[in-house]
Length: 148
Image (cartoon, rainbow, N blue to C red):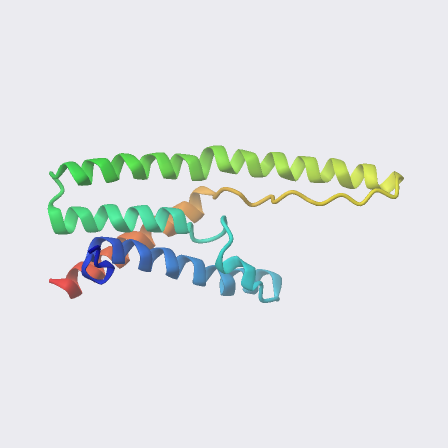
């Protein structure tokens, strides 16, 4: 039987992910002056929960199993893919959505069309990914210190 409570590596990643998701709500509220609880499950925003998850798991893998282990190597490569995707491909998709939404608004100004807007925040800025990276490292370190 798979015992989730006995897996500190997974716990480190999940705690990092959860903290990142929760922190998005007050950070966004400071900017917009309104509470958007949908951010608890939404992608994008500061800090990157994807980055916090994979970095937390990878760092915890290194701490518990050794930085010379094959699992750490796999985790490190996986982190590189996730971070590249978060800052590159998904960010560009968000920029495209932003441009399409602007075109729809232009069309709607001359016509009574009302189109659904695309989600513009799909990826992360490098700063948001850095926030997730620091959060993932910190949580994994704390879980390791408490677990040992």
